[in-house]
Length: 114
Length: 316
Image 1 (cartoon, rainbow over the protein chains, first blue to last red):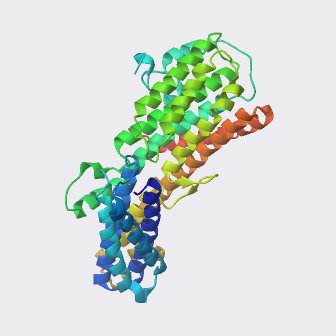
Image 2 (cartoon, rainbow over the protein chains, first blue to last red; image 1 turned 90 degrees about the horizontal axis):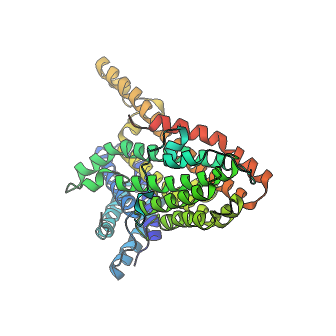
Image 3 (cartoon, each protein chain N blue to C red; image 1 turned 45 degrees about the vertical axis):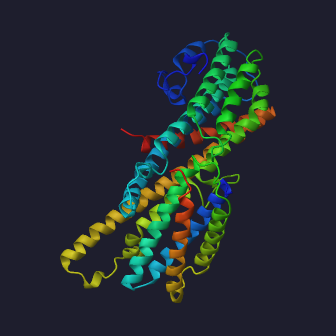
C-alpha cells in the first residue's frame, strides 16, 4: 500500500529528475538528444502534475506488491538521474534511465483516480 | 446542513474587509456596540486572515491560469484528452480552499469582535452565529478525508464548535487557547498543501509550488536554452530579420520570467503570512498582552502585502 507520503516522496524524486534531465538538455548540442530529453522532461512534468492533482483526492493506493515494487523502482531511477545531473558523458544513460522512470511512474499513475 | 441558512453568501457583506472574509451582513449589523478589551486585539488577526484569504484564492486561480499553456501542451502530448488535466488545482479544490479560509476568517472575526472594544452587547448571539457559520463553511468545503488536506475541515469545524461552546464567556484568550491546536493544524495544513514545509515555511520539492515550477522549467526549457546567460543563441549567424525576431522573443522571454518570479514570490509571501498569522494566534492564546500585541501588530505589513497580491491577481 502506498500513502500520501509515498506520492510526495515520488514528487521529490521527479522534481530532482526533471532538473537533472534539463541540465543534460542544456549541456548537449546533439539535436536528437535534445529532442528526446525535452520530451522526457515534458512527460515527467505531466506525471508530477497528475500526482499533484490527485493528492487532493487520493487517500491511499491499495495495490499491494505491484505498486510497492513500482515505487521502489521509481526511487532507484530518480536517485540515478539525480546523481547524473549535468554530466555530458552520461546523457545516453540519462535518457535510458528517464525512459524507465516514465514507464514505472505511468504504472503508478494508472492507480490514481484522476 | 441542519439549521441550513446559516451559511450565507460570501458576498453578502457590503463593507471593506468583511466582504473578503465571507462574513454575513447580519453579523456586521450585530457587531455595532461596545465591550471591554480582553488581551491583545485580534482585530489585526482578522484583517490579516481576510486579506490572506482573498490573496490565496486569487493566487491559486492565477497559478492555474499560468500553468494552463503547459497543461494544454501536456494534453497535446498525451494519448487521450482528459478535462481533469486542464487544471493544476481543480476548480472544486480552489472553491474548497475558499470556504476553509472563509471559515478561518469568521473564527478570527469572532475573536476580533471580542477584543476590539467594539463588540455588541449581543456578543453571545454574535459569537454563536460566527461559530455556526464557521462550521457550515467547513462542511461546505467537502474536502476529501485522508488527502493532503486531511484534518483541515475537521479543524475548522472544531473552531466553530469552540465558539459555540464558549459563546457566553466573551473571553477571547480562553477561546484562542482552546482553539490554538486546531488553528495551527488548519493553517499549516494549508501552507503544506501550497508546497511548503517547516516553520518558517520553506519551499518543498513536492506540492503545488514545486509542481508549478517543474512545469514551467520543462515547458520553457527551449527558451531558457536559447536565451541562456542573457544572450541569444546563434545570433551571429542570423539574418537581420531573424535577429529582429529573436530580439522580440528575447524581450518576451524576459517578461515571462519576471511574471513567473513574481508569482513564485507571491506564493512564498502568502505562505509566510499564513505562518505569521498562526504565530500571532498562538501568542494571543498565550495570554500575554504584550507578546500578543507585538505579534498582532506585525501582521499589519502582511495585510498590505496580501492586499497588493490580491489586487495583482484578482480576475476581472
